[in-house]
View 1 (cartoon, rainbow, N blue to C red):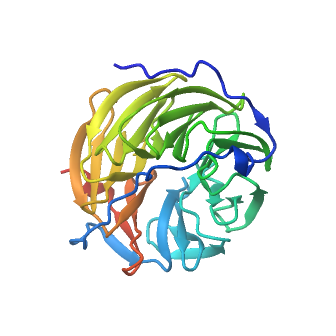
View 2: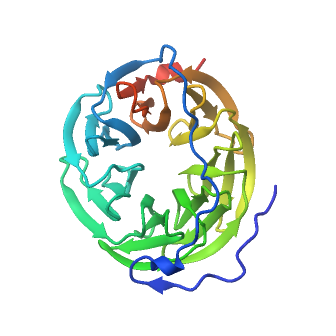
Length: 340
């Protein structure tokens, strides 16, 4: 088990909004991106049309799926069982990532075009709070166990902290181009899409507490219970399971060739779901023993399967077809298909 390096000196805490342009790091190398998927084969399960090219998706414990879409930009609230739309929430620019502040919401939607964070009630689509000034092109957001929301400041580097609907602090790079992140207890684990590894922030203390290299170039992350997180090494063709306490140590490595990108975890059934964008495939992995993950089955998906979520009530899996050149779609894979 390898131990990742811990930051010796914690970066100085900067209160208020994100750092000024002069403090922002230069983005010098291409970020990790999903593969451009070929035409899809016959996807398993049920595929329903979804207006506006979809990207991020989450499912509440009440069975409401929130899907970020573009053209028109907004959030579609959908019945996770049937795929029938309940309501549409227009936004300023399209949210790429969505997350849940709690198991049943609200939905966190960073808006890259307006540098805002929306907090949305999934039951009725009402915008509870609009937080402004959450960095330059905020990419993803999670809420740690103490109630602090951490937002990745993708084009500014570092992260922004939000409490009670307002920005309370920000930290500069840090990660040069922070992408996806996972809430692991009181910590937020950030993947740097520039290839600089994993950065760990404390929600209660609003500070950087650990950092270390991991993989080739990471994109997405998802929590796997109390002290574990999975990271998609999109350029390296693998998914890493890491322990965060807050130092980061490798637990296992899952082979995932073909630009792994979307991640989701079913805590009831101990399944990790990985979209392989190069081949329109969903890889289902049993992680009941995180040190010995066991791939179960690969399933055909809709084209450009960039995001995936789980309906924990039933075990059904929802996948978004994100290719703007095709008819946009939502795929619902029954739980019965996840075992060979």
